[in-house]
Amino acid sequence: MTDSPLAASPRSRLLTLTALATASALVMTACATPKVQISGDADPSATGAPSTGDTTLDALYSQTLEWGLCDGLDLECADVTVPLDWDDPTGDTITVRISRYAATNADERIGSLLVNPGGPGSTGLWYAESVAGYAGTDLTRAYDIIGFDPRGVGESTAISCGTDAELDEFFLTDFPLEDQALLDQSIAVSEAFGQACLENSGELLAHVDTQSTARDMDLIRSVLGDDELYYFGFSYGTELGATYAALYPENVGRMILDGAYDFLSDEDLGLVQAAGFELAIGNFIDWCLDQDECPLSGDVQDGKDQVEAMLATAASDGYRTSWGPANSTIVSSGVFVTLYDREYWDYLMLGLDETINDGTADIFYQLGMAYVDRDPNTGEWLSNLNEAFTAIRCIDSLPEDVEPWTVADLQEYRAELEAATPTFADAWLTGGGAGCDGWPVDLVGPVESLDTTDTALPIVVFGATGDPATPVDSAIDLSDRLQNSRMVVREGEGHGSISSGNQCVIRIINEYYVDEVLPDDDTRC
Image 1 (cartoon, rainbow, N blue to C red):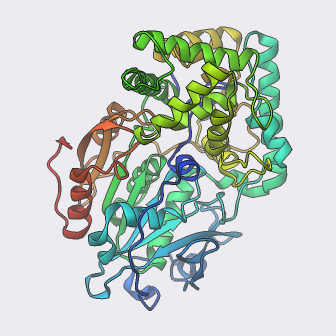
Image 2 (spheres, rainbow, N blue to C red; image 1 turned 180 degrees about the vertical axis):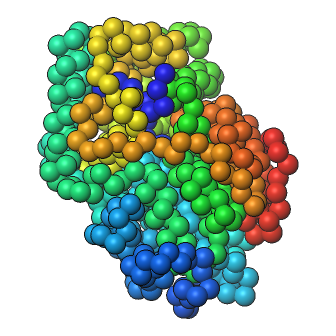
């Protein structure tokens, strides 16, 4: 077993741990509440800025921010200067862009709440307003909500790996792994892509690891004027939060990890996810069969067989769409994105109806393009989500996890995958994505353990029983691995809990952040 499922196979699929794709595709618009400007920037003398004896690093920790309007968002934005290489903080610097949804009541303001929507690779500037809308006025009176694009992502100093056409070729091409020659070809493609990322991104490629981003978060905390980090992390953002807690346990304030997973588990996270999506497609089919419009027939297993057959047709023949053919990578991405939230099951039912009854795949094509953040009409990749995802997941791998695979390795992994997800196994292996064989920079890996996370206040961890991307057992495992935590389980479908509309969840979030009221461990919502 490997710790990094992306690295486990040259083409194995680890689904993006983010809310971004569904947000852009299906317009998850949070309600905005009125804001007032909180004047003034951080007073360096009042922050938890370290006194390192290094004047350059001390200056970074006490820098003054220049706020202005964000591009395309009703928020303020500023650039934070951070070291390119945290092992050489006096060397070159890069910028991390942050956004601010200002607290609505200066008298009740507690501090700044840093939020991250996952990924890795997802832009997070927009997420400040989304969290404000989900959580409501109690939270927005008490905190400036701060979003950020992590290093390598979006409007921060960003990873780039090629032109739109080159990204199409890499991320949207089916790579059936059927023999050693095809496997070797896939590895060569991955190595060439890594070289393209290095040529286009330069030294940045070697410094987009999660630990470096966690260190950036501590610097952001300081320049915002907070002694402690108040943090809400969703999905991959839970890995960021737990990593921060391992590096800076003394600086952790109130922290919630929603849609969490045990990123240090000996289990292959790709297989854990695969089992989660198998559960989700079964739950969807059980619901669908009770709908008059459902195109599936028989029982749940019959429905799974029909979905598997549809994906097999996408792999062998492709489906016609208004924009060109839709292969297995595109159609399966369109299916996966609808399983993140029960609210999107209607889209999945419509897509299945089109492919089964009309033999076309316009709906799945549009959903698949939204998942990878690509405009289906122009072919433009709208963000560097996939490039950053690949770069971060690869550098977070351990060297022993990226040994070249043989066909025998592949057959062993396929058997494990088929046990985890009989419905999606072939699509999981065929789908576009990147392995990390021959990645052109030194690998950093995750933090070694969470043994240092005995924080002053327990970290609250959320998991959901029907979460396909971060299954609840993995969230419980992360909570157990943290040295001081409280576990909350939401009963229901969908990835994460803050956007579920579950009022028990929202109450816990507000009481914890605003009044420091802790939920009982193993609370169920």
